Amino acid sequence: MLIPDFTQYSLALFKDEKLIHASDGGGLRPLWGALEKHKDKSGLLLHDKVMGLAAARLIVHSGIIAEIFTMVASRPAKEFLEESGIRLTAFDVAANILTKDKSTVCYGEAIAIDTSDPETFLQKIRAMMDNPVAMPNPP
Image (cartoon, rainbow, N blue to C red):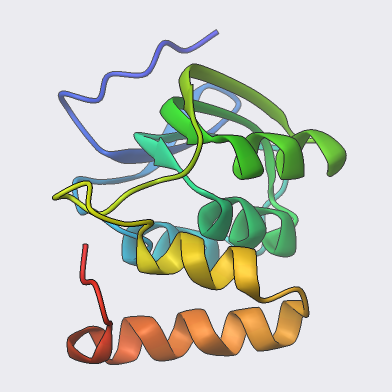
């Protein structure tokens, strides 16, 4: 088992215990890019520092991740991943993922909670990443 080293990255993808992708960025953009770049693979291990419902839904939609290690997962993300058959190890589980100032639920998590249709969810997340200035509460 590979132990996450979040001092070296915020997100990393592994195939057969070999590092194939790493990023130190925040938010959903690094995950989106990693899932797109490696969409032809399967059975990958993901280390992601924070796992909210938006990230969980992107992961399930991608179909390439088999297992996730994270520092903190939101309760909705944990439940969604378990229902979807993806193994999750989280060092902490929070009610929701909050903005950096902890004043409200982060925008991606709010979109994921409020949007049940997968295609509409993907459109809203893509729009959020294309226009971060329009976000009501940027992370």
